[in-house]
Length: 182
View 1 (cartoon, rainbow, N blue to C red):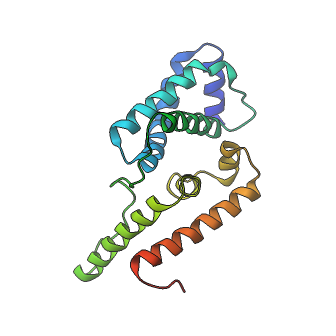
View 2 (cartoon, one colour):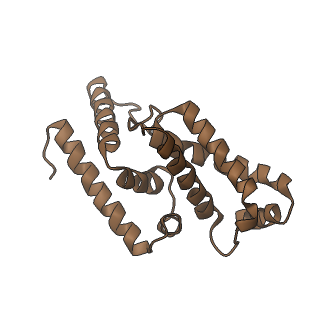
């Protein structure tokens, strides 16, 4: 609720408080773009554009909803605008969460690294809509309610989309690894 109060103050003219919101949310927005573009420089530029638009369109903010959902709606628009200008890149960034290999025997550590690479490839090969819902739910830890607000759909629809995306990811992972899903 604190983000909503800060944004309401920004909307009402206390633009200096945007710095606090920037500090809190810049990392998540940056990761969102890195997962979508695999390009650190482009992701930095897009994240900056998001906060520029927050400032520019602050008068449109309505505090009844989640600030984070409103912020990611802006991020989606920024990304869509970028897609209309360039061909999207689909490789996953190296910063994708690694499967923890601490204290594993060398052969098991190698296997985990291989699985991580296959997972990255499987995720990169997914259609953008499925990849985006997984990024929001699994990598950025947005709640289903927030994702529903971002995507402008019902929570039940988000749950179905996440389920289908996870199933698709699993199928792609096992196809790439040469194994069968159990």
